[in-house]
Image (tube, rainbow, N blue to C red; front, side, top):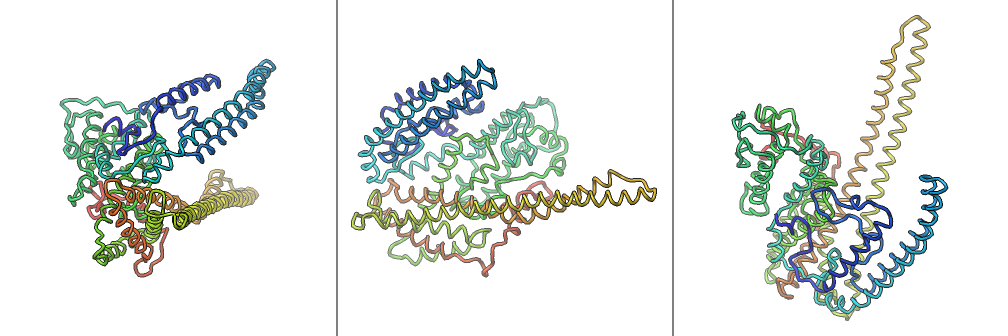
Length: 600
C-alpha cells in the first residue's frame, strides 16, 4: 500500500478549494502546541501515537482551542464561543486545582507554587480562549462568501481536511484500487502483535498475540503438510515478514471487490485468510508444522466480523451497507488510529457509492417498470436476512429523503428558492428525527440491559447468602449430632447458587443487549448511507441530467425498500439470530474451516 493510502492523509480523489495558507497555520499551531505542552509540564512522548503508526500527536492545540479552518460564519461563531468558554473554564479549574495538587505533592511550598501557577493560568487561559475565539469568528466571516459559492456548485465540505471537495466516482474507484481494507487492518494488528497485545476481540478469542519475533526456521526442517504454505505461495522456511508480505499481496489480488465476475472469489479470499491466521501465529504454526490440520482441531477459530455480519444480516447486504463498524472494531479494536478508522469509513462509503451508482444507472426513464421489477425481486431476497426487513426500511427511508432533499435543495441541488428551501429542509429534519429516535432507543436498551445486569448481581448475592445461611444451619445441626462439617461443600453450594441466579438474569438481559447493538448498527448504517447518497447525487463525473435521473431512481428504490416485508410475516427472532451468528463465527467443519455452503 502507498504511504498516502495507509496514513489517511487528505490526498483524496477530489478537487479541493481554499487550502491556501495552511502551511503557515499548521506551523503556528505546532508552535502553540509545543508551548502549551511545555507550560503544562506534559512530556512530549506521552502525546505521541503508538509506535509504528505515525508521529502525529493524538492531542494538540486544536483539541483545546480550535484553530481549524471554519467553514463559514456559523461554524466560526460556534468554534469561537467554544474556545472562549474552554479558556474561562480551564482558567477557573486551574485556579482551584493547581494549589490543591501542589499542596498534596509538595506541602506548603508546593501550595505556594501551585497558587502562583493557578493565578497565571486564570489570567492566561481565558485571554488565549478569547483571542482564539475572536480569530475564529473573523475567519468564519471571511470564508462565508467562498462557502456560499462552493455549496451552490455542489461541492462538499470535508470537516477533516477543512476544504471544499467535489466528489468524482471515477477518481474514487482509482483511489480504492490503491490498497485494501485488509492492508489497513493488518497493519493495526501487526502493531498490536509487536507490542505483545491483542488487536481486538477476534485475536483475543483466537489466542493470537505475542512479541511478534520471527521464529528461527531451520532450512532443513520438514513439515507434515505444505497446504497453507502453498496457499500463500511461500516456502516452509518463510519468515513472519515474508508470510505477512505474501498475504498482503494475495489479499489485494484476490479480494472479492476486485473480482466481481469470479464466483469463487470469496472462497479463495477466505482460504488465504485462514492460512495467514495460522502461519502468522508462532504457536499455531508449530502445531500445524508438526501435525497439519489435525494439530488445530482443538483450536476453534473465531471470525468476529462474520458474527456481526450474520447477526445483523450485513453479510447478504454487504453491497448496500458494507462492513459494519462493530465488525471492524471487533477485528482490529483500539489499535486502529483515528486516521485509519476514518480512512476505512471513507473507503466503505466510496465502495458503496460506486455500487449504488451502478444500480441506479440501470434505470431507464422510458421503461421504469423494469427497474421496479428488479428492485422488488432484490428486496424480496434481502428481506429474508437477519434484520433484513428493518435494515431495508432504514436504507429505503434514507434513500427517499436524500433524493427528495437533492431534488428540492436550492443550494447544490436541483431545487429553486420558490419554496424558500422548505421542502429540502423538511427532508433533513425527518432524517434528523430518525437519528434521534435511534439514539434514544439505543440508550433505553442499554439502560434496560444494565438494570437487568444489576438486578442479576443483587440476586446472585442474595442467593449466595441464602445458600450460605442454609448450609450453616445444616452444619450446626450436623455438629450437634456429631457429624463432621465440610467448608468446601459450603463454598461450592454458595457459588453454584450465585452462578445460577446470575445466568438467569444474563439470559434476560441478552435481548436488551442485542437491541442496543442493533440500534448502534442502525445509526452506523444511516450515517453511512447518507454519505453514500450525497456522493452519488453530487458525482461530478456525470452531468446534472444524469444526477437527476439517479435521484428519480433512488426515490423509487427507497420506496420499494420501505415496503419490505418479512417472509411469511415472520417476526424477528433476536435469540435465534444470536445462536445462528455464534455458530457462524465459532463452528468449523472436520477440515478445520467452514463448509463451502457456509462460506457462500
